[in-house]
Picture 1: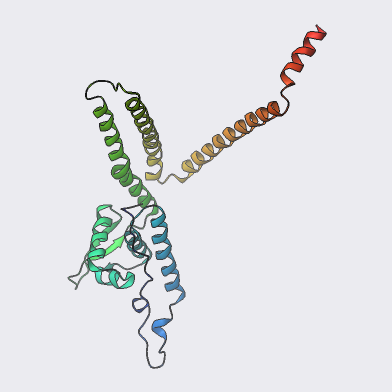
Picture 2 (picture 1 turned 180 degrees about the vertical axis):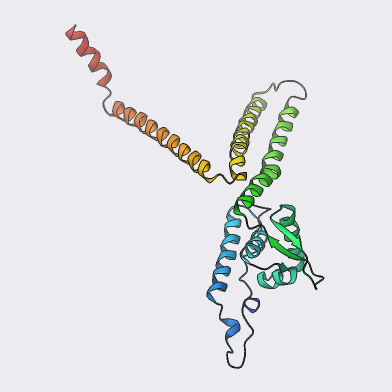
Length: 245
């Protein structure tokens, strides 16, 4: 979803910031998280782990998950304590989240601290992530590929076989990126409009196309396998036809 992969292992939420301090009558209170706290922990950890699989900054994803799941705005100190991250790491990732329009900085009466709240509309989150990844990832690759092709043609069309092969592969990559771009442009208006009904119809149509393609391929594979196992099938028919005529 966002940023670059973070190699730092995902931290466990700091229990001291999630549960009440211990008291003489309940000395283990700070060590025993509630069901709600365990659920929050699981969600933040899961979001961070998934981010790592997607090549995304783990800490950035965890901060977003924490703010998304928390009803009240959180300040930087609270985020640092809950996720056990440094101030520099927290500030850097909070700035990135604000830049991505996934988190807003807010003020609270009586406090000079900056507080942060996450966008909670999942459709807006999805729209923002699609737009930002397109802008930050697909567009730069398209620009670089086009520039590389232009460089190959700086002294005229590529003459060597190696250069021609390289150019062909660059064009293949450019074609694929155009397809991704077109699919994104086609789907984004439905996501922006929160048109779940049409998105489900599009998904069903794509699934049917995929099923039809698989069925046709299976039919071709079956015919090919039959011909390989009985290579006389083709000639037998013509012989029979010839004898009857």
